[in-house]
Amino acid sequence: MARRPRLFAPGLLYHVIVRGNQRRKTFLNDTDYGAYLERLGRYRRRYDYTIHAYCLMPNHVHLLVESSRESLAKFMQGLQQSYSQYFNLHHRKSGHVFQGRYKAIVCDKDEYLLQLIRYIHLNPVRAGMVKEPEKYLYSGHRAYLQGKASETIDPSKVLSVMGGRGRYRAFVSGGMKDGHREEYYEVSDQRFLGAEGFGEKLQDEHEEPRAKKRRPLEKAVQELSQLLAIQPQVLRSADRSWGVSQARTKIGYILVRRQGYALSEVARYFARDLATIGTLIGRLSGRMEEDERMRREIETLTKKVEI
Image 1: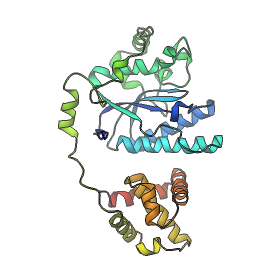
Image 2: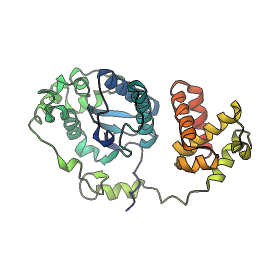
Image 3: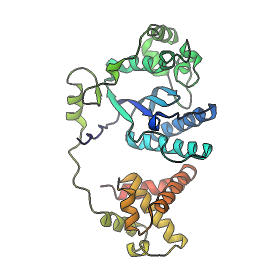
Image 4: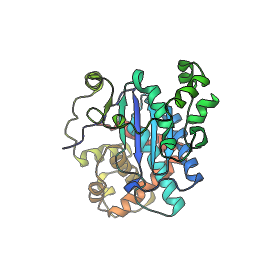
């Protein structure tokens, strides 16, 4: 059975769980943890997301995030792809760093926000890595104890609700003996954590009708080609000049990364092998991390041809 699409709306609380590919380690040293946290802060700012809690474990990640007007998919795609590129380059590896599909559970904020903050920050204790959560360097727990905002997390709102740092510390200490909470994972429809009817209510309020059948690839290429002032047949030719190659790469990136066309489908259309198109798209993705102008151009083109 096909997976149902994720529900998205601004202001929803998501418990996101990302696992290493084939359960392999995603962080091999302190530099790796720091690289992920730097990117978490960067994309939080870029997409105006709120991080309520996080914990980076050796082979998986827990995030408790509140969405903005930008989709969770866009936030996670930027974060995961950027770190994967770093990891493969830094460790001279190739292939997927994370499992293909992360888990994103929409949670009842009123009922589960505080419970999940505690549960996520106590992950290293349950795993036997530390005896006290403040000893673990790669979670948001110490930011709450200090009451200071960082690039990644701002605990002030939650602390004000709880009554301060002392109350937070006592609350977390009260859960030290709790074990794994399977109910946080085996949730309604595999998407919702809340009281009976919570998921159905959210779907009625926010879920969009099923998308229409996707338009042919040729139609999407024509629209993008027109915006870039280039003829589609030129993109499929043997022309490897800089201008044509740039246009081909930009269009390929938008088709694959933003509109969901298969890489093999795009490669066939452009009469190029899979490795060539994949490499070009990967290089553009890396360039966008450093080139704000390029990133904005791609965002503008994408919005103009969104289905």
